[in-house]
Image (cartoon, rainbow, N blue to C red; front, side, top):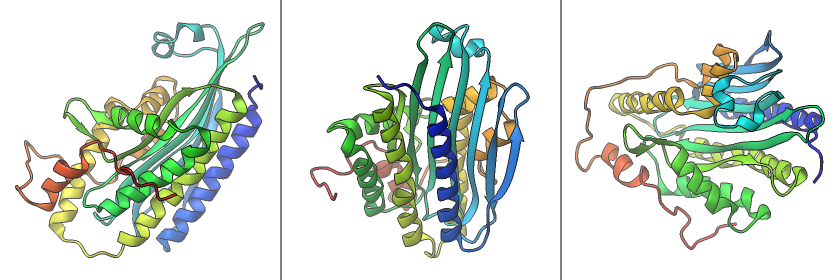
Length: 308
């Protein structure tokens, strides 16, 4: 098995952040990302980039972080006792994009690498990541494009990779207390360390590189559609589900807070505006009801048709 190349992973992740930021700026056409470099006193640091009040994107955050330390917090080693007593490094790119227009979905992506080392023993390492789509008012063709691009990224690495990671995504991005998915899914994987480092790193890069190809064509098709204040209000209400998931379930958010990460960068994923309502229900037969009845139902979006 090839040894992990931490420097190669770091170089790729920084380059990926640059590429995604440039393409998002081009799509927005108005605002640029502001950059905030930071250091973590306990070890590591990061490069947070945030675009606010753009022509298309209300807020977009693309964060690179790398944290390290001599010991993991007890919350991390409770489920992974083999990590106790090891120094660790965790690095990744994480992004969330919240558009103005309710016809443009919110999207999230994350690619990450973790390694824990101890003198005289083999390192413990893995990759994780994926991306998912959270629409408000949407179209089948957009969801099919999203999933087809994800499948194309996975195809070189095995016949069942897309199906396995899609299923994992559907199960992971699920609000148990609401009994509903966060959105229409995509890809999710974790603990990837087989068959070897190069193969796993290649898959991570394929997923990371495919994100903008999956998302930005949807943005271009929908960003100029007219919408009503009622539709904007529904978007803000549905954003509440995004907040609930990130603060209750999201592994990256919880690990970042528990390991002493930078709170401002960790919580950049939260939308600038959001609403909650008591016991709200959509009108039967409405476009809002269709989101629940059609799109928030895990399904085989590609069916028997492969557009690759």
